[in-house]
Structures are given as structure tokens and as C-alpha cells.
Length: 322
Image (cartoon, rainbow, N blue to C red; front, side, top):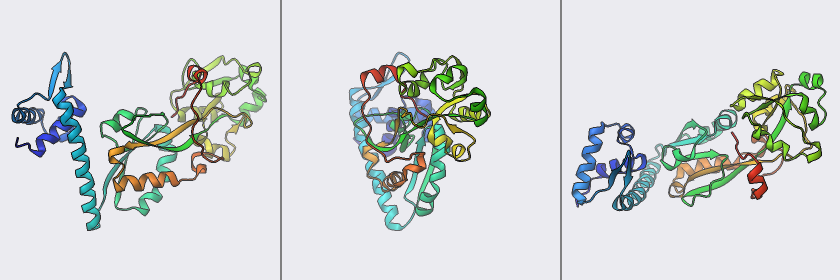
């Protein structure tokens, strides 16, 4: 068939993006160059690989078959390149690491220096985003740390830590409002990630129904750091991940209002494609992340395997995390 590697690479990228302009951008070529390579490839195969249906591109049956083959080939080539680099004692290459925005800024960057110092042959680039899964599946990221539970069979999944939440307020605000029990929140301004207050279900579902407050004075702030700053400034009471306020709690700038109430927990996982899990640079990074102590994530207890939420939890609870 006389298949050429650059044609296959062009097809592989186009098949992932299903957009000629985006594929050209990723390949650092012009859009006509992508079109030309695809025409030559399809001509050599005497078959259509990608067709237009309405306003979108889709893979044909032959295209899907070739895509799976290309995926295996290019991942094998990446492993071979890494092995050659390792034998020569040069860089193992780049790992593109993704994380949710607040966790990435607050925890991840702070804890990666030791890895970089210990593994100068691995270069790590960071991308913080609230929707990481598509970026991983499209190979725009290599490893992600995400709070969404995903059982996709093509992904390697490792539990990193339990994300614990705390209800916090500034000491002066707590004194002025005389907050001693959950019901006292009814007279407070409550800071929430969303306007309808479902963010607070992590707390409300942990409180016995007779003691459960009705949250009225909600202020929506769509960023964890914004919630933390507003709570520090005495704007209101916030519900935030413990890792995001560990420093403020230690300095008594914020107070954990209800430490005896076991709030619902989410879990952070490390994900990578199973086909890429054999790369040495990935193995080194994942092992390092798993070696971090729970205290680095604001935990005081050992990690445990996550429990499946009940049907009632799934309906009432808000499993989002940041």
C-alpha cells in the first residue's frame, strides 16, 4: 500500500480532533497540507477513512480500524523512543500533567519540586482545567489528577487521596454571629459554589435532619480560592476542601466550625491511558504522587478505598470537587 508515516500521523491527529483546522494547529502545518495528506492516504488505500455528515466529520468503519492500529503503533514508537533515550542517558521526555484548578495551584505545584529535583531527566508541564477527561482521551494530557470517578476501561486509575471538606469562618465573624451549632447558620451569610446551594449537600447530609439548617443568605462564588478569601474577610461562612485552607487553619485565620461532624468526602484519582502506563516517565511520576503523605492533602487519617454512593446519595449529593 505504500503507507507513509507522516500520512498516518496526520490521519491519527485528525481522527482524534475531527477538525481540519485543529489538526493543522496540532501538527504545525497548514490546513491544505492536512487535506493533501489525507487525500493521498485514502487514495493509496482506495477507501474513505473520514467522511462529512452534516456539519461534522466522522470515522468510517475502515477509519475506525486504522485509528486503533495507529494508536497502538504510535504508543509503541513512543516507548521505543523513551528506551533509546534512556540508554543514551538523555531526557526521557515530557509528561503533560493535568489537574483541577484549585488542587493544582494549592497542592500539586508545591509538591512537585522534589520530583523534579530527583528526576531531572523528566520534564513536567502543567495544565489546570475543570474538564480534564477529554484532554486525556485526546492525548493533549498524559496524566491527570481528577476528582471525577471514571471507570473507562481504556484508563488506568489509581486512588490518590480522600478529599475532605470543612465548614470555615473567620474568628471575628463566628463571634459576632454566635455560631455554635449547625442551626446557627440560618442567620449567617453562606458562601456557595452554586446559587441553589447544592454545593452544601456535603455538609447538610451529614447533619441529623432535626439539626439541619435552612440556608437562606447564599452568595455564589464560582471558585474555591474566592470562597476562601471571602471567608477570611468575614463575608460569610464557607464550605471548602481542607487542602485549600490548611495554612489558614494553622494560622487561625479561619476556624473549622464543626470538626466532629463527618462531612461527605470525594476522592481524587490519578488517570492515564493504559497503553501509556508502561512509559518510564509516567511510572516515575505516578509512583511519586502515590508516595506523598496524606497530610500533604490536608488529611489526618489514612487513605481508604472509596465506597460506592447509595442511590439516595447519588440523587441528593453533589459529587463535584475542585
